[in-house]
Length: 376
Image 1: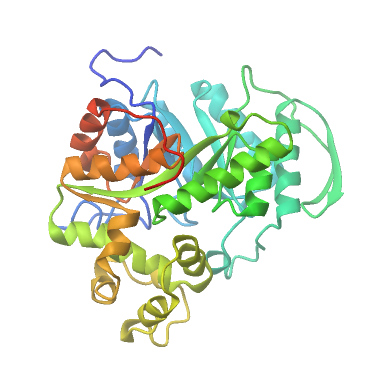
Image 2: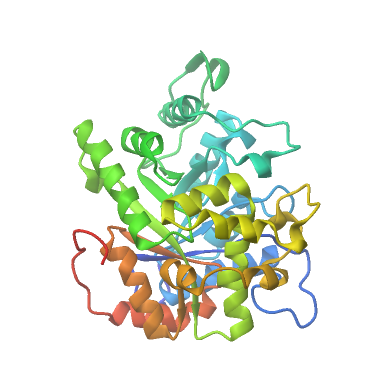
């Protein structure tokens, strides 16, 4: 399929993360753009992303009406050039044959536009599923198994990733295999796995540029230790963007989302440690009256628009350092800090592609400069 003539030029270093959070079956009357997003709107957002010139779209999933493979297939069927990726699928939710089959089918249907973004799983979100978070060895073995299946090889395996007895594809897809990306903070073990087995890494949102820089250096060091060119690993940093949006929408996207991350202890502790944020302040946020007696992650009970009161406890400088909001020009400058820190690509996060229309246009016009040795 050829690309329509009315598409904007592609911004090769800017992608869009779609429906960042929960979805609704229908959108309530009068809801704000990101307050309630339906699966159909997610597909429309992917189409809009292509028209605006985003390099690719990422989409994670929840196990209800937000299955990533279904939504990304809908986007790919209605577009011609935008790349599509799972950002992320929790690897334990599918068998190796299903993961490999997803990538092979997407390429067979839509050409080499699909990236299989995987995560090991998050305990708070796996609760009640009967699935365990994969260890690093099991996760690495799973990636090897998926690649072997794409090559049409039989796989017999008995190890931490399970037990397989001679499984293989009856038919393989034509053309190059999908890329495999890892969603991670790229701490030493994660960085080593990226260097050994992955094509790219998706760094989570709400990191400061210094944390991006540290992750990039760990990945580069891990690559050099095995004589792999670090340039072979593409690094995409997710950044919450709110360009020229009203105050309520901005605070919901930026501050409300940050509360959802920080309230959940294992994940929030990773974010705070990576950013060098004060642990006592994080504890005060978790101790807010709104969270008393909760037996689930706040993100599963409240929408970020409903977290603005505890969000008032977050220091504004934390948000300025780790997000991109304000005017379009201010957002461009904020995003550039992450490129200077070593990212190859930015994924706008939280807001919709349409909300970032002015931002991507300004991003294409910006004056590019080489990455500095360290963030300043």
